[in-house]
Amino acid sequence: MTKTVCVVGLGYIGLPTAVMFANHGVKVHGVDVNPAAVRSIQEKQLHIEENGLQERLNKAVDEGFLTASTTPVEADVFIVAVPSPINPDKTANLEYVRQATASIVPYVKKGNLVILESTVPPKTVERIMIPELVKTGLEIGTDIYVSHSPERVIPGRIFEELVNNDRIVGGINRKSAELTKELYETFVKGQIHLTDATTAELVKVMENTYRDVNIAFANELAKMADLLDVNIWEAIKFANFHPRVNVHFPGPGVGGHCIAVDPWFLVELGGEKAQIINMSRNTNDSMPKFTAQKTQAILNRNKIAGGKVAVLGLAFKGNVDDMRESPSTEVIEELQHLGLEVVSYDPHIKENKHETQTQSLEEATKDANIILVLTDHNEFKAYNPLTISTQNKIVFDTKNCLNRESWQEAGFQFHLLGDAKNK
Image (cartoon, rainbow, N blue to C red; front, top):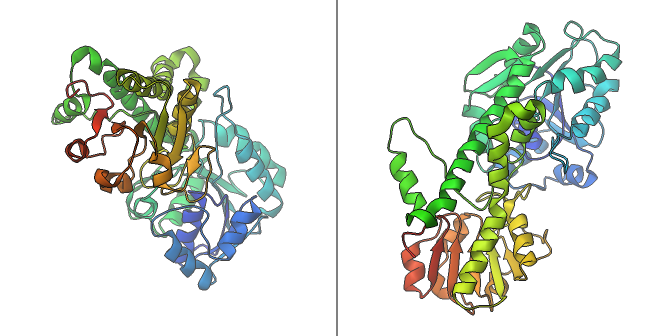
């Protein structure tokens, strides 16, 4: 059993990972550059939303297995779980990974294992981490061990998937991979597959890129719906009855820290060799503008000039509070560019993080000319449309999450993204 683990980065992946090890009897010290995040963890207050996290955090802190600060400490294992976003020009920003690795260098000693969990472009361990770790003066691969083991979980189900999903471990050598496998066997019940670090880096980016390309296909079909007078959601459902077909669903764009980001890593590395990936990213990035234009077209058909749009949903996906790369913010920008007033509401984002945001559903929908649903929160599915007051009874559902019949029975004109069959 590993004695101590130091987790650098206490966000959506780092904190659940730290808590999971702590709940299984491992002494964990968490590190984050955000003092407010550290303070909230010390006080057992959550700065992120995740099912089951509060009780697990309480147990970890109360039993003394989890501590937190803004600086690393000596440990047997160091896990780096920091953001790896893209720059405005769509290139990878690996500065957080470099800085996090540099921060542990004074604390790394002979026999330690360093694991990168962040999703990164292939060759990041080799080109970013190793040059920092050699500054320890220790020999890489014999004195200290290094590996990449990317998380493969989705917000809302992190703890279930941390335990049950298969895990990929890529070491800089076999010993690094085996030591990492032994560590994660503390709680992982899924299979742990061993490979080299670069392959592990590629596998995670491949997984998210596959989904992005698939969604781009669905979004192109949604754009074609008006030409065909069909309901794309219905067509996709029937196509997926084929045993070897799994078409994803369209939407107002692709968000989150993975699917909207990781394919750009391959575009940057592959250049002209990554044409399908590049086109898919551009297709998905075009959806917020397409959604805003469809919203305006609906208003125009109802002879409403300008008008107020009540946007429901700011999170990038349903039932989470994560706004990273959320297409909702881009849809709002496009709506405003078209001269429309926007008030947004999201029941999972408890404090206003967007200039259009209100904490009141009633305030968002009051005097609205159209309700635009951009996130499929369970709360939205459960709404009784008879209780929602608007100036015009028009709703545009981009996630196929509302009950068409109940909204129409309540007097609403109902529009669904990708549906030209039920005009």
